[in-house]
Image (cartoon, rainbow, N blue to C red; front, top):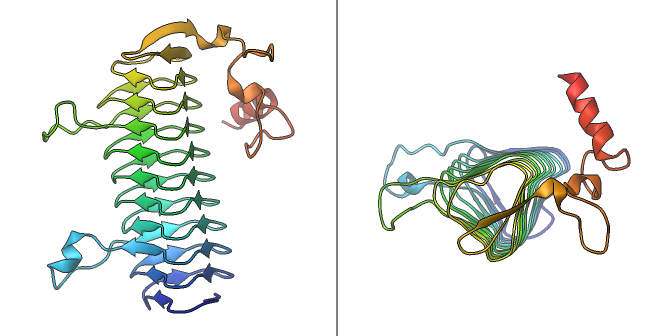
Length: 257
């Protein structure tokens, strides 16, 4: 454990793994576990207490876990009762509210905001300025590009909170909005500026406001490349199929089940 700078406040009730580096002015609250070889950059807060901390003299901070080999960049805040898997990376000034579960090999970009009670699978990529509302969820290998949003209130303000869902391998392009409670299937491409107001079937190319399903994505050929979707067959950087190809990797996964 290496507190390599100044004014670092680590609770005696926190569990810090080996070779963890914690930067200036960072706070690690009670019942936080940080995995080996992780880096917490300056001015970050891990295990931010819930509202009861300020009112209840018997408050106990719920446990929080950051998996090994993670990098939390400066000015990020992760609330208590979050579980984040190995190889996590955050951008700067990321907020992750309480009760979030995030899988392994995920990244959350600068200025993104996860509003709590959210479930995210493995190998998901949320770029900068992404907003995810409470009770939303997504599968594995989901990418959301800058300024895309998942909402949860069909007629705000109300108590009828309905987070949406995004299926495995789906790509959500810039400025797209997933409205409250909407289910987006697997292997979809949601176009830039789309407003997704209804269910999107698997393997759909959806564009527009409101969306129109314009094509089976498996028939969509990438302009200038001559290669069809799905994207997994032509992109592998940082993916578990890197160097062997998606088809080989997928077959291996199937054989292990």
